[in-house]
Image (cartoon, rainbow, N blue to C red; front, side):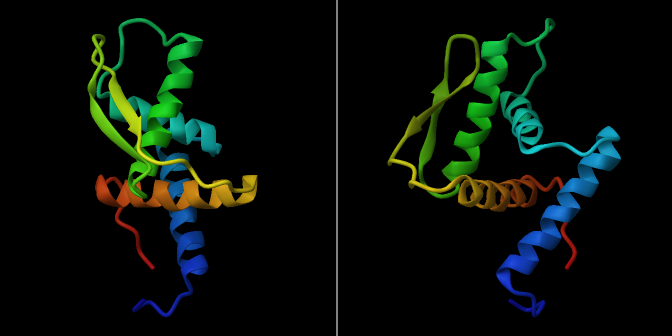
Length: 124
């Protein structure tokens, strides 16, 4: 790592940049669920003409999790359903992690998502 930062310090610094991006874009600091919801909407690729149902909101967050965990080889997208929504296949069981470990892994994958999708250019 050329910045001289530890991996945890790098993740912390990039995560703070993700929070600044959301605060600047939406004028509020989001929680993890809000970020997952917005990633899910982005992965869907379109906004419906009506509001999302509770089940659709839950599925949008699931889609975001699938997308994020696809970076670790846990999920793979297998096309779209008849409504045009992405369909994901679980390739292997997710690891048994504590809530803190789950949040840490999600943060790492969210950072990776923003890098790969070229949404944020991180500075260290």
